[in-house]
Amino acid sequence: MRTAPRLLLSLLAALSGCGGPRRTGTAPTSPIGEDPVSHVELTISNLTQAEAEAFKEQVRDQGGVENVALKSFQQGTAVYELDVKGCECELPSKVVAIQALGFKYQGRVSRLSFSAFDNQPPKVAFVHPEEGKVVTDPEQHIAVEVPDQDVAEVAVNGSRAERYKGNIWRVKLRLAEGVNDLLAVAKDKTGNEGKAQVRVAVDTRPPALEATVRVVVEGQVDPGSSVLIDGREVSVEPNGRYKAEVPVRKGQKQIEIVAIDANGNKVVTMKDIGL
Image 1 (tube, rainbow, N blue to C red):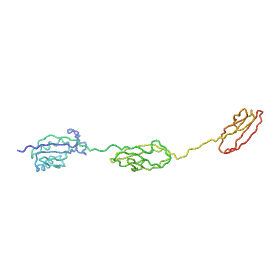
Image 2: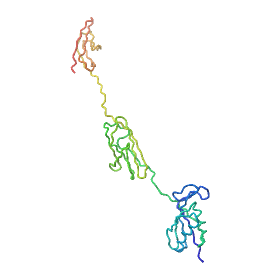
Image 3: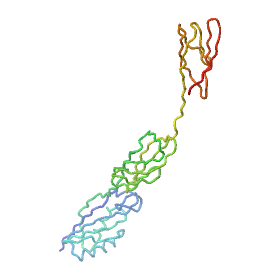
Image 4: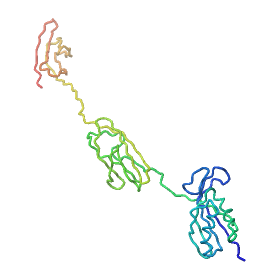
């Protein structure tokens, strides 16, 4: 009499439950709903090669089992991959129902399966210009540093940058007069985007220049006299000496000097400005 073959089910993904109406199958694309699909690795020992080949058809006949493939057969142990409509927990009863040999259920081993992917955005930092910088040339080579190794593309304000040296990417832009906001976007091969932003200013206008010209006026009058230069009284020393800085208007050619003695006598003199 043959020894009853042993049965082992190995699940390729996590199950969210087998009893409720909303079950999740183990296939990666299995929907959550009434008709999930479970992808199962099934191991059966104590078989001959012929029995292993025949089992593929026998398990299909149980209904709800599709895509049965004999993955390997070594030393009497067959490994299958197959899809079960519904929860994988329904498969043992389907196998045991096969009358050709008589199968004894040995339990199942669950195995979680994940595929890793990159969800981290690249790091981006401006090298030139720095935040708040004022430049006098509107033509600027904008440089950013992106240290990530899987960078797919870098752009600044929508203009594609090229790798310059090492982790430095650069693009030449013409900035507008005044304040400019620069946005650098780095995208990796997975599609993650990293961003950095600075605000800089362009100032190409020369400064407005206003200057007041002053001339020094000095001379001698009779002691006790008063002196007015362009209508402004200046200080006179007891010996009659005076000296003063006088502002000169734009385009002014002469200054007026008026001397008035103690008796009210007045003399007016016009002096040319030697500018």
